[in-house]
View 1 (cartoon, rainbow, N blue to C red):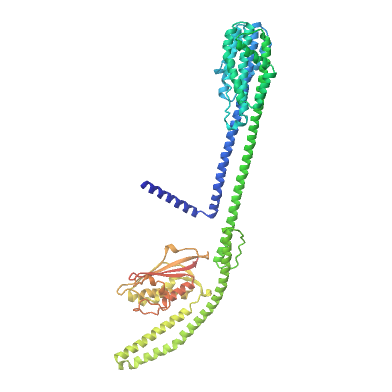
View 2 (cartoon, rainbow, N blue to C red):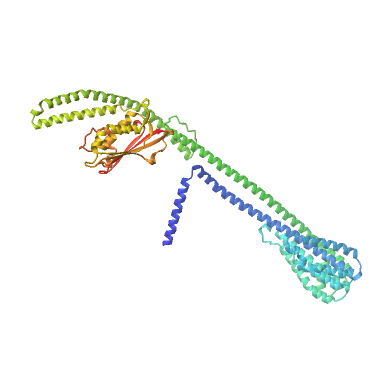
Length: 636
């Protein structure tokens, strides 16, 4: 069970790794991979097919070489048979020397051909056959030392041994099926020629020497039986056409009297006076030549057919190779073209989507495809139309919003300005009442007067903050190089008395110079530092730090000419619940009623930061202080 679990876990890990690997690949690489895999499979199959064709061609060429090798061995057997007769005649009558010399040259030329064979076994055939004794028997013939029987025996042994080298071809080979019957028939005919030649020579020897006729017949009887088995084999293996031609030879040529005489001889087991030695040699030679002629014609026809097979196989291999190369090139070209088209269409969709994301409402995507990409293009068309409609609606809304904002700002300014006079009168008359009649009032009336004065002061502060808030509009003409270090020093100076009273510790990093509106930066830092001093823990010295985040000195903005600066204001004050982190930036929101304030300060900070295309976030826990993260763009 554990082994199964481990195996399942490995498979799961492998599948996850493969999935992640393919997901990380770019689309062109995925498409290339999709094209490379079938191309590689096609190339592999092509290689295997060409390899199989080459193997078949190799075997056919080997068979061709073996055909020529077999032909040369058969020619050498014929040459040795002729040389045997001439050597025998020379030994008996000391004649035919000229013919013997020419025959020896012919025999030696065939021997040299075999010795130059590419087959190492065949080229060394003299070492393991009786042919190595050929020079010795020739010398004995030339020196008139060899007896006729010795000559017959020596050459017959050579012929028998050479005949064993004529191995048959693998007729079961699928490559030789078209010529398998003719190969077998040709081989059988060659055996028949060899055995008939040996019988012929033995009969000639008896007729010539008139000695040991019974012994020779007894020794030749087995050879005669073997000849007939080959004749039966020919009837089984040969094609009907070859069998018919052999039957015609037996009926109509010198082969008939030759075979009839041999069959009669072995039926009666004695010689008659029908032929003398020379007549027999002439008649039987003509008969064997007819059989050899059939074998040679079949041999020539078979060689041609095998040569045609080799040529046809070479042509087929070349055609297959050309077809596979063309197919592979077409597949690769189609894959490359498909990758190019898909990549181009997706790039066009990517550019169009990017333009739409930036608010461009004049996007044209000219893709017509009945597939997923076409559907995606149609979706982008619809998206672009919707964006255009929404952009138009948004523009109208922005126009209306700008008008509303202006009206609101005008209202806030007028309202706050008009409110200042009543508040001033309330403060004035309440102050006069306190100065003139305070001591005459009872305690309850005194408290009422104090509350009126306090409320009037608070109203005056709210009206002032509202005026400041209504004036916070971004004006590019007001932007200038601002040294934030100088701004903070000015703020510290403004709050110097409060800092001393609370024994606050202020820690400030070295800050850069940025493009900003100086007055608004002062308001931003003043409100944040005043907030930190105000909401400190009773009896604990405030610790306020102004730092630059190391990990935020530069995420690129949509405007590539800008980087972002992150400043963090942190304190050790009373803090607040994190769930109120967004609420504190809303107008008139106050989380602690025990502290003085209008609830506009942090809303003012947010408006200033947004005017500068930045952002502000708060993080806090009760009793653990608060931290304000301010992100502002600045030019390098």
